[in-house]
Length: 68
Image (cartoon, rainbow, N blue to C red; front, top):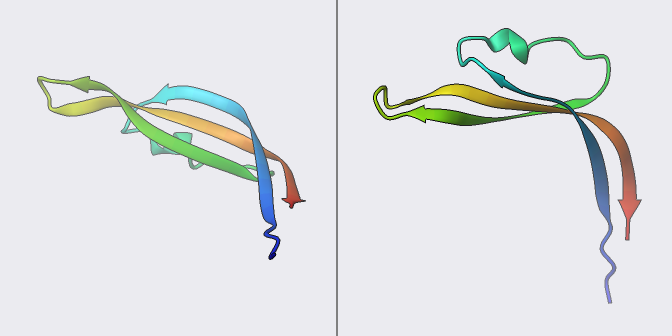
């Protein structure tokens, strides 16, 4: 039987905030450590037919390990 290994990558959420879609500087800040940034849209406006804000979640890399 062939055994499969994989990397377990663990991040810790450090930032969870609502940002304007017109403010890209919120994600372009330099970080001295490894981070991941996730975005989703929120606050859909029926009148405008668009999302008013974005939810930005940033997490810092905590650990990487090889799992069997």
